[in-house]
Amino acid sequence: MFYYIDLLFFFLSLCCTDIVKLADGGSRCAGRVEIFRKGQWGTVCENYWDMKIAAVACVRLVGGSRCSGRLEVLHGESWVTVCDADFNQQDAEVVCRELGCGSPVEVLGAAAFGRGEGQVWSEELQCRGNESQIHFCPKSSSLKHNCSHDNDVGLVCSVRLVDSGSRCAGRVEVLHRGQWGTVCDDNWDMRDAAVVCRELGCGEAVDTFHESHFGSGSGPIWMNDVDCSGSESTLKNCRSPLWGKHICNKTKNSGVICSGKLHCLKKSNISYCQLSSLTVFNTASVLFS
Image 1: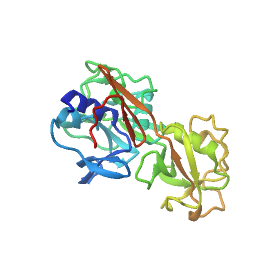
Image 2: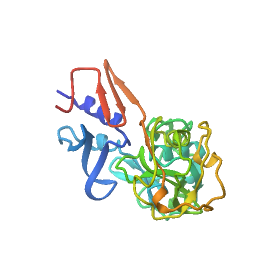
Image 3: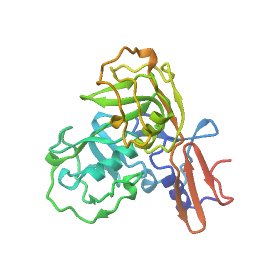
Image 4: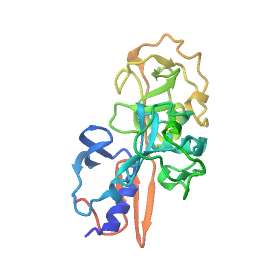
Protein backbone atom coordinates (compact mmCIF):
# COMPACT_ATOMS: atom_id res chain seq x y z
CA MET A 1 0.00 0.00 0.00
CA PHE A 2 1.23 3.50 -0.84
CA TYR A 3 0.95 5.74 2.21
CA TYR A 4 0.48 9.49 1.91
CA ILE A 5 4.18 10.39 2.21
CA ASP A 6 5.13 7.81 -0.41
CA LEU A 7 2.58 9.22 -2.84
CA LEU A 8 3.88 12.75 -2.21
CA PHE A 9 7.47 11.73 -2.93
CA PHE A 10 6.36 9.82 -6.02
CA PHE A 11 4.84 12.99 -7.43
CA LEU A 12 7.87 15.04 -6.45
CA SER A 13 9.94 12.66 -8.57
CA LEU A 14 7.64 13.41 -11.51
CA CYS A 15 7.63 17.16 -10.93
CA CYS A 16 7.56 19.17 -14.16
CA THR A 17 8.69 16.25 -16.35
CA ASP A 18 7.27 15.17 -19.66
CA ILE A 19 5.33 12.14 -18.37
CA VAL A 20 2.69 14.12 -16.45
CA LYS A 21 -0.02 16.20 -18.11
CA LEU A 22 -3.28 17.95 -17.29
CA ALA A 23 -6.07 17.06 -19.72
CA ASP A 24 -9.52 18.45 -20.62
CA GLY A 25 -9.20 21.54 -18.42
CA GLY A 26 -9.09 24.18 -21.13
CA SER A 27 -5.38 24.95 -20.61
CA ARG A 28 -2.08 23.16 -20.01
CA CYS A 29 -2.19 24.27 -16.35
CA ALA A 30 -5.58 22.82 -15.39
CA GLY A 31 -7.43 19.56 -15.79
CA ARG A 32 -7.41 15.84 -15.07
CA VAL A 33 -4.00 14.52 -13.98
CA GLU A 34 -2.64 11.84 -16.31
CA ILE A 35 0.69 9.95 -16.31
CA PHE A 36 2.36 8.26 -19.28
CA ARG A 37 3.62 4.70 -18.74
CA LYS A 38 4.13 1.63 -20.93
CA GLY A 39 3.15 3.55 -24.04
CA GLN A 40 -0.19 4.91 -22.85
CA TRP A 41 -1.71 7.65 -20.70
CA GLY A 42 -3.51 6.72 -17.47
CA THR A 43 -5.26 8.57 -14.67
CA VAL A 44 -4.42 8.98 -10.97
CA CYS A 45 -6.66 7.74 -8.15
CA GLU A 46 -7.94 10.51 -5.86
CA ASN A 47 -7.04 8.67 -2.63
CA TYR A 48 -4.76 10.92 -0.52
CA TRP A 49 -4.90 13.58 -3.25
CA ASP A 50 -4.68 17.10 -1.81
CA MET A 51 -3.17 20.55 -2.34
CA LYS A 52 0.32 19.52 -1.18
CA ILE A 53 0.60 17.01 -4.00
CA ALA A 54 -1.15 19.24 -6.54
CA ALA A 55 1.29 22.06 -5.76
CA VAL A 56 4.17 19.99 -7.15
CA ALA A 57 3.20 21.30 -10.62
CA CYS A 58 4.25 24.71 -9.41
CA VAL A 59 5.46 27.17 -12.09
CA ARG A 60 4.01 28.86 -15.16
CA LEU A 61 4.56 31.82 -17.48
CA VAL A 62 1.44 33.87 -18.24
CA GLY A 63 0.60 36.57 -20.77
CA GLY A 64 3.09 35.56 -23.46
CA SER A 65 3.74 32.02 -24.72
CA ARG A 66 4.77 28.71 -23.14
CA CYS A 67 8.32 30.05 -22.89
CA SER A 68 7.72 33.71 -22.11
CA GLY A 69 5.46 35.66 -19.80
CA ARG A 70 4.78 36.76 -16.25
CA LEU A 71 6.18 34.29 -13.72
CA GLU A 72 3.61 32.76 -11.38
CA VAL A 73 4.10 30.15 -8.65
CA LEU A 74 1.39 27.96 -7.13
CA HIS A 75 1.35 28.72 -3.41
CA GLY A 76 -1.31 26.93 -1.39
CA GLU A 77 -4.48 27.16 -3.46
CA SER A 78 -3.56 30.30 -5.42
CA TRP A 79 -1.16 31.43 -8.12
CA VAL A 80 1.09 34.24 -6.89
CA THR A 81 3.45 36.54 -8.77
CA VAL A 82 7.14 37.14 -8.06
CA CYS A 83 8.74 40.51 -7.28
CA ASP A 84 11.26 41.76 -9.86
CA ALA A 85 13.56 43.24 -7.18
CA ASP A 86 14.12 39.81 -5.63
CA PHE A 87 14.65 37.86 -8.88
CA ASN A 88 17.96 37.48 -10.71
CA GLN A 89 19.63 35.69 -13.61
CA GLN A 90 20.29 32.52 -11.58
CA ASP A 91 16.61 32.25 -10.70
CA ALA A 92 15.71 32.76 -14.37
CA GLU A 93 18.10 29.98 -15.45
CA VAL A 94 16.23 27.50 -13.25
CA VAL A 95 12.73 28.57 -14.34
CA CYS A 96 13.55 28.35 -18.06
CA ARG A 97 15.20 24.96 -17.54
CA GLU A 98 12.27 23.64 -15.50
CA LEU A 99 9.80 24.64 -18.22
CA GLY A 100 11.90 23.04 -20.94
CA CYS A 101 12.59 26.39 -22.59
CA GLY A 102 16.37 26.61 -22.72
CA SER A 103 18.20 29.62 -21.32
CA PRO A 104 16.78 33.02 -20.36
CA VAL A 105 17.09 35.76 -22.96
CA GLU A 106 15.60 38.52 -20.83
CA VAL A 107 14.42 39.09 -17.28
CA LEU A 108 11.80 41.83 -17.44
CA GLY A 109 10.52 43.82 -14.48
CA ALA A 110 7.81 46.45 -14.02
CA ALA A 111 4.98 44.07 -15.02
CA ALA A 112 6.16 43.83 -18.64
CA PHE A 113 3.61 41.04 -19.27
CA GLY A 114 0.83 42.76 -17.34
CA ARG A 115 -0.07 42.98 -13.68
CA GLY A 116 -1.03 39.77 -11.95
CA GLU A 117 -3.85 39.19 -9.52
CA GLY A 118 -3.93 38.03 -5.94
CA GLN A 119 -0.79 38.15 -3.84
CA VAL A 120 2.90 38.70 -4.52
CA TRP A 121 4.97 35.75 -3.31
CA SER A 122 6.19 36.39 0.22
CA GLU A 123 9.47 34.47 -0.22
CA GLU A 124 12.64 35.28 -2.14
CA LEU A 125 14.24 32.70 -4.43
CA GLN A 126 17.98 32.22 -3.94
CA CYS A 127 18.78 29.76 -6.72
CA ARG A 128 22.38 28.92 -7.55
CA GLY A 129 21.39 28.50 -11.20
CA ASN A 130 22.12 24.77 -11.56
CA GLU A 131 18.94 23.40 -9.95
CA SER A 132 16.53 21.43 -12.15
CA GLN A 133 13.43 23.01 -10.55
CA ILE A 134 12.77 26.00 -8.30
CA HIS A 135 11.39 23.47 -5.80
CA PHE A 136 15.05 22.69 -5.03
CA CYS A 137 16.20 26.34 -4.71
CA PRO A 138 16.90 27.86 -1.28
CA LYS A 139 14.36 30.48 -0.26
CA SER A 140 14.40 33.27 2.27
CA SER A 141 11.56 33.64 4.75
CA SER A 142 10.69 37.21 3.74
CA LEU A 143 11.15 39.74 0.97
CA LYS A 144 13.68 42.55 1.22
CA HIS A 145 11.44 44.94 -0.69
CA ASN A 146 7.85 46.13 -0.48
CA CYS A 147 6.49 44.93 -3.83
CA SER A 148 3.16 45.28 -5.62
CA HIS A 149 1.90 43.93 -8.93
CA ASP A 150 3.60 46.87 -10.60
CA ASN A 151 6.80 44.92 -9.86
CA ASP A 152 5.74 41.53 -11.27
CA VAL A 153 8.71 39.85 -12.96
CA GLY A 154 8.54 38.31 -16.43
CA LEU A 155 10.85 36.02 -18.44
CA VAL A 156 11.72 35.34 -22.04
CA CYS A 157 13.43 31.98 -22.64
CA SER A 158 15.24 30.98 -25.83
CA VAL A 159 14.88 27.36 -27.02
CA ARG A 160 12.13 24.75 -27.10
CA LEU A 161 11.24 21.34 -28.57
CA VAL A 162 7.66 21.11 -29.86
CA ASP A 163 5.04 18.84 -31.45
CA SER A 164 6.14 15.51 -29.97
CA GLY A 165 4.10 15.31 -26.75
CA SER A 166 7.31 15.52 -24.73
CA ARG A 167 9.34 18.52 -23.61
CA CYS A 168 12.57 16.58 -24.33
CA ALA A 169 11.83 15.70 -27.96
CA GLY A 170 10.48 17.45 -31.00
CA ARG A 171 11.11 20.13 -33.60
CA VAL A 172 13.84 22.57 -32.56
CA GLU A 173 12.66 26.18 -32.29
CA VAL A 174 14.59 29.28 -31.20
CA LEU A 175 13.39 32.71 -30.15
CA HIS A 176 14.81 35.65 -32.10
CA ARG A 177 13.52 39.22 -32.30
CA GLY A 178 10.46 38.22 -30.33
CA GLN A 179 9.39 35.47 -32.74
CA TRP A 180 9.77 31.68 -32.59
CA GLY A 181 11.35 30.11 -35.65
CA THR A 182 12.88 26.81 -36.76
CA VAL A 183 16.37 25.47 -37.50
CA CYS A 184 17.20 24.09 -40.95
CA ASP A 185 18.41 20.49 -40.98
CA ASP A 186 21.40 21.15 -43.29
CA ASN A 187 24.44 19.62 -41.52
CA TRP A 188 22.33 19.00 -38.39
CA ASP A 189 24.08 16.28 -36.37
CA MET A 190 24.51 14.76 -32.91
CA ARG A 191 26.89 17.50 -31.74
CA ASP A 192 24.23 20.12 -32.45
CA ALA A 193 21.59 17.96 -30.76
CA ALA A 194 23.83 17.51 -27.70
CA VAL A 195 23.90 21.27 -27.15
CA VAL A 196 20.10 21.54 -27.39
CA CYS A 197 19.52 18.66 -24.95
CA ARG A 198 22.01 20.10 -22.47
CA GLU A 199 20.52 23.59 -22.72
CA LEU A 200 17.03 22.25 -22.00
CA GLY A 201 18.17 20.12 -19.07
CA CYS A 202 17.10 17.01 -20.98
CA GLY A 203 20.15 14.80 -20.63
CA GLU A 204 22.03 13.47 -23.65
CA ALA A 205 21.10 13.47 -27.33
CA VAL A 206 19.63 10.13 -28.43
CA ASP A 207 18.85 10.85 -32.08
CA THR A 208 18.54 13.62 -34.67
CA PHE A 209 15.74 14.04 -37.21
CA HIS A 210 15.57 15.75 -40.59
CA GLU A 211 12.99 16.71 -43.21
CA SER A 212 10.47 18.11 -40.71
CA HIS A 213 9.93 14.78 -38.97
CA PHE A 214 8.00 16.63 -36.21
CA GLY A 215 6.08 18.82 -38.65
CA SER A 216 6.76 22.22 -40.20
CA GLY A 217 6.86 25.26 -37.97
CA SER A 218 4.78 28.34 -38.69
CA GLY A 219 7.51 30.88 -38.01
CA PRO A 220 10.61 31.84 -40.01
CA ILE A 221 13.66 29.63 -40.42
CA TRP A 222 16.12 31.42 -38.15
CA MET A 223 19.21 29.18 -38.25
CA ASN A 224 20.91 27.19 -41.02
CA ASP A 225 24.14 25.20 -41.34
CA VAL A 226 24.52 25.08 -37.55
CA ASP A 227 28.01 23.90 -36.59
CA CYS A 228 28.37 23.13 -32.88
CA SER A 229 31.47 21.60 -31.34
CA GLY A 230 29.20 19.96 -28.77
CA SER A 231 30.60 21.84 -25.79
CA GLU A 232 28.61 25.08 -26.15
CA SER A 233 26.22 26.00 -23.35
CA THR A 234 23.50 27.26 -25.73
CA LEU A 235 22.56 26.68 -29.37
CA LYS A 236 22.95 30.39 -30.07
CA ASN A 237 26.64 30.09 -29.20
CA CYS A 238 27.20 27.64 -32.06
CA ARG A 239 28.59 28.77 -35.41
CA SER A 240 25.87 29.62 -37.95
CA PRO A 241 25.41 32.08 -40.85
CA LEU A 242 23.43 35.27 -40.33
CA TRP A 243 20.04 34.81 -38.67
CA GLY A 244 17.27 34.32 -41.22
CA LYS A 245 19.70 34.07 -44.17
CA HIS A 246 19.31 30.70 -45.92
CA ILE A 247 18.11 28.77 -48.96
CA CYS A 248 16.22 26.28 -46.79
CA ASN A 249 12.47 25.55 -46.79
CA LYS A 250 9.85 24.37 -44.30
CA THR A 251 10.23 20.72 -45.31
CA LYS A 252 13.74 20.68 -43.80
CA ASN A 253 13.19 21.53 -40.12
CA SER A 254 15.50 19.81 -37.64
CA GLY A 255 14.39 17.67 -34.71
CA VAL A 256 15.88 16.03 -31.63
CA ILE A 257 15.16 13.28 -29.13
CA CYS A 258 16.94 13.62 -25.78
CA SER A 259 17.37 10.99 -23.10
CA GLY A 260 15.61 12.97 -20.37
CA LYS A 261 17.07 13.73 -16.96
CA LEU A 262 17.32 11.41 -13.99
CA HIS A 263 15.68 12.68 -10.79
CA CYS A 264 15.99 10.73 -7.53
CA LEU A 265 14.42 11.38 -4.15
CA LYS A 266 14.86 9.22 -1.07
CA LYS A 267 12.59 8.73 1.92
CA SER A 268 13.80 6.30 4.58
CA ASN A 269 14.93 3.26 2.59
CA ILE A 270 12.85 4.07 -0.49
CA SER A 271 14.38 5.78 -3.55
CA TYR A 272 12.25 7.11 -6.38
CA CYS A 273 14.08 7.69 -9.66
CA GLN A 274 12.59 8.99 -12.89
CA LEU A 275 14.29 9.09 -16.28
CA SER A 276 12.22 10.38 -19.19
CA SER A 277 9.13 8.09 -19.23
CA LEU A 278 10.62 5.32 -17.06
CA THR A 279 10.00 5.25 -13.33
CA VAL A 280 11.96 2.82 -11.15
CA PHE A 281 11.35 1.89 -7.52
CA ASN A 282 13.82 0.08 -5.31
CA THR A 283 11.15 -1.51 -3.12
CA ALA A 284 8.30 -3.90 -3.82
CA SER A 285 5.75 -1.09 -3.52
CA VAL A 286 4.47 0.11 -6.90
CA LEU A 287 1.75 2.50 -7.93
CA PHE A 288 0.92 0.79 -11.19
CA SER A 289 0.21 -2.85 -11.91
